[in-house]
Length: 169
Image (tube, rainbow, N blue to C red; front, top):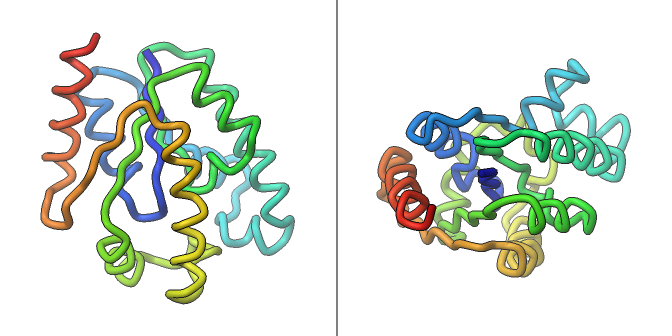
């Protein structure tokens, strides 16, 4: 089984994904971390030096590598779903789970998080537009939507997903 976590920046994909993988006894891969490790540069620097188009191409290549593994949880980047070829891979090769906190919760998390690896986190209006644009992609590709309240811990979210997956496998 392959589990792909999708969602907007700061939705918890990496944190929840790592815990979920442990609960399932699966391997965990964070696409952004793999890219940073391969290039030896932050995502912000890759965007600045080579552009978003280049980043999405590399992101797709790394995502494509994950389909050769079974028993894996993959934390995708917030914009992975916007590239058609990546969208198609997600839909075809695994269970796609959308981590969906309310926008206001995301904004609070983005304000606290390091902006180092969030090149598209500019101002409230641009984030709102990006969120609204990406949400339609998330909705179309997701097999399962996990609505997240702001007060839930990552452990609670991971446990909720684990129980759902356990009941359908």
